[in-house]
Image (cartoon, rainbow, N blue to C red; front, side):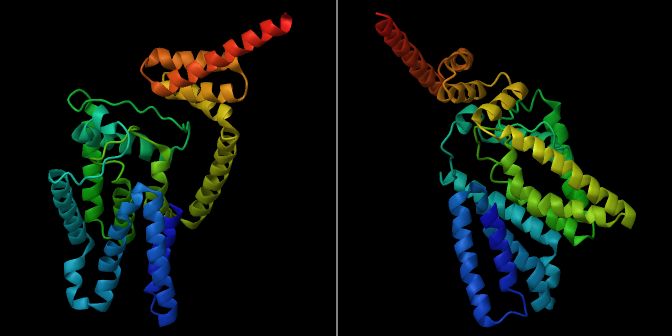
Amino acid sequence: TFFYLLTVYFFVATLAPSRTVKYRLSLALLTILGTYLALASKLIAITLPVIILFWILVHYVPEYFPSCARYFRITNMLWFFVCGGVVLVIIAYLSNLLYMPKDQGFELYGRVPYLLVQFKVIIFYYLTKFVFPFNLNVDSGFPFTDFATDLGISFSIFIVVSIIISVLKMGNIWIKLGIIWFFLSISPTSSIVPLNDLAVEHRMYLPMSLGLCLVTGWMLSCLKKNIQIFSLILILLSFSVLTTQRNKVWINEITLWSDSIIKNPNSPRVHNNLGKAYYEAGQLRKARFHLETSVSSIPRYVKSQFNLDNLKNIIEEKRIDSEKFQK
């Protein structure tokens, strides 16, 4: 996320009219370097070239080529990128070039079912957490449901389509840019590339940064001055308290996974990670309980079985050492 935003900043600064040629060349090199670092650190950075191209077409083409401005309106650009993206995905799919992550997402869900449930994830998890950032969890355990039996998926698709249509009809460019940024930056993890976890909080960092925050800032700017000040103070105080409370959870692995197990008690991964944390802290009884709980949920869960076997070996060695000492 850091390299992504830094690259966008370098790129925008490169095209600033008041800069010298030498300064622009330096920023251009930093833009290339930032793009490489962003792509090397996170899958979501695959959208960075698209964001840069979109920024050029919307902001700079109308300014320097006014005769072509009518061809590069945001609505036209949005349809262009949507259609172009669909064509590229179809070509990549047919030629087996589509990226496949190194997990079991494809085997667990499949491409289309994963895509459909992501609409529900966007509405009922990501946007909900943005508005009400409470009850955060490192392992959300968002359940997978089938489109045919879950009306929430159909409702979410309707909401997403309604948002896009409403934004396209609005005349405010910042709202359009914010929504486009949001959907573009979230698309790598909420499309037809299935991942193990349906919903993860850190996937929202980039979509929020200049996407939803831009929309929220514009909405606040439309309010009266005294309401703006009150809202800003309320947001700062609320987020300060929430950040302080959340930081207490991240003190160590035991506190982190203990918090997660309260919110998602049926997750074998959470029990495994908490058991591993207790094991490393020398609390073997607690470690055994959580590792056995994890294995009982999914007997073929290799990590839990491996950790449990190690724990049993340690306990057995301690028992033998204790017997030898008593003799």
